[in-house]
Length: 193
Image (cartoon, rainbow, N blue to C red; front, top):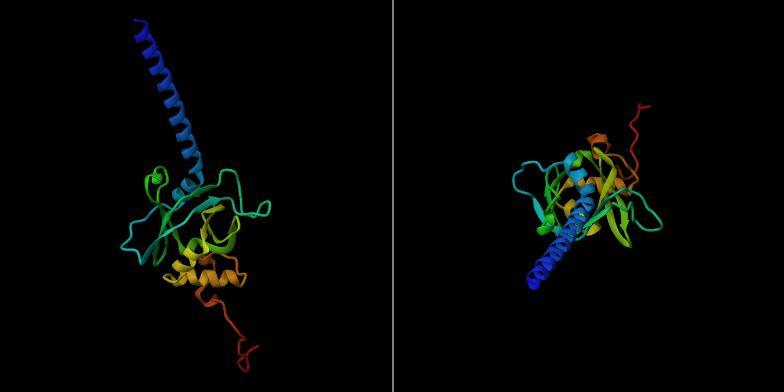
């Protein structure tokens, strides 16, 4: 009888330890995805046709913008997600976490008209910071090679990168089409003031 009580007791202790472990793991996953969920609730996935191009990116950081303590560390709730699929469409980028990590991280569609792109750093690595009009207090950091690859398939993103290089830090939808960057001098027309 004593052996049965010991077995039941050890099973209860094991069950409590597993429940505690899974509870802590769930809480960490839930808290670390808060910024991603904030973005994806403001910019949910929209139904589209086929993507122009699709590629796996390395780590993506979602957190507060700003350089802190010499590195692009941001706030403590910033989350770094492992590989993310980046799909390029005519009007924006679709970001989706792949694999079993996708749990709790819904896809987000970032339209070019609400987007602002600028050079940034993730640690010591060159990146681009993507800020969106509806989520001004957060940004998505993507490696520079994936953003430049996407810009090769999306002229709107390429124009944003060029405007950023010239120091024109406004959202893409704020600039009329005629305000594209002009290189060189304008010719003056006679009689014009």
